[in-house]
Image (cartoon, rainbow, N blue to C red; front, top):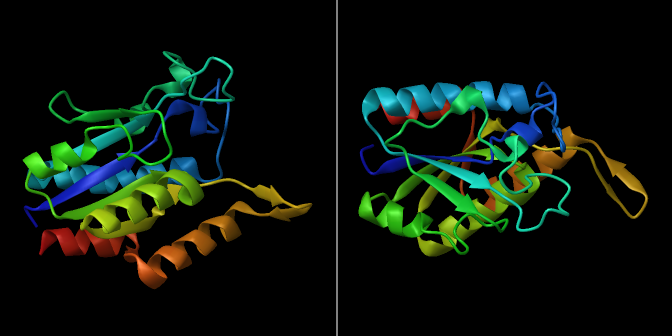
Length: 188
């Protein structure tokens, strides 16, 4: 598994309902982060590469992840270590306009385990982009979070949004599994 990296996407204060100043609280962020922290601990224990991705809006008019704000900082539950790269992005896709692929290439990585938020946006985008580039991807479904959505007057609960996107990813893009199953995989 030495050619596998963990990518933690957008575990930032604004997404945590328990964070006092959260501007875009998601459903289940704390549970997702707790599972991500298990993977993070095991990757660190095994000396495998870990990459954090942090989104920062380009404008002060954005609803969340405002430039240089506390809300845009990575949450303490998955704080990066000094030697772990932190990718700053301004787009939904973590590869777009960043050095993520360069870092993965330098690390000789060809497999990814992806966790984070939001399931229907940044997790979906980074996974599809990674597969298109040629990476073998795994998503820990219980280490991802999203929120209720509305379309055309229909409310879609977060759990249904999440499951729809996990089903779509598992159908044609990647392995979608639990944190525990992915922990077993990396320990092999």
